[in-house]
Length: 281
Image (cartoon, rainbow, N blue to C red; front, side):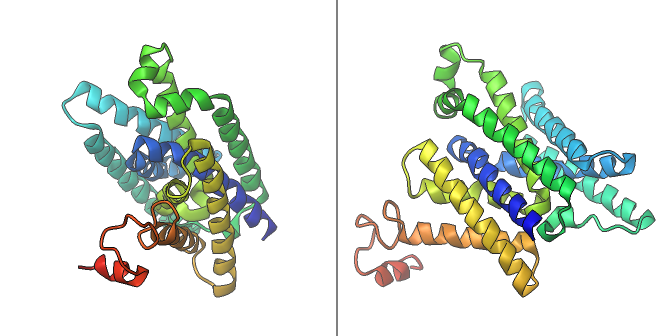
């Protein structure tokens, strides 16, 4: 339980920090594409007997390279490239995992939906290393990534290496997805990447505030979901996602800045209950 709590806290923080950049750049689908694309990497790493984190990271980086390469060499747009690449990688990963499980009495399905209660000391160490690398990179490149996220053309005109910044951000996303595999699994990792940042986006105006509050939301959701999973004997990944989704719903409905039921400028003025009923008309 102590190991699970440590991993939950670390993953909750880095998912919110990296996910904030996905939010402001409107790249949520990219996080989903990378998260699905790591499956064949971890399956191949398992077959070769090497660290599955390394295999998953390499697969995630390869998928981002393909997503960027296809639109440059064809009329295919980026969103279509994401759909093609992540579905192909995900299908390959499922096929490999199914084949492995036929020949080995081992369950790899926890990588799909998460099993935070089953983390081992080496996985805690690997997650801690990834968390330090991600947070250190964000701290060192915060101003550059901030400029690039909100004004990529201006960042390029000012001389910033935007292609390197974009590649670095893709690497950070891949690392975060790899760290989150044991917590919520590759199927649900998008929620932990986006929902904490989206919740904070409804409550605070600045990116650094969004990261800080989002990290708090991510940690609260991860720890709460962990305890719900433990005491009610439900899957850990879905429990964490349900908690973070509930926190977003509260901010969406009751937030002081954009709350549907609390903002004075909300259409169909009246009592909160009248506004709620008005949403269904």
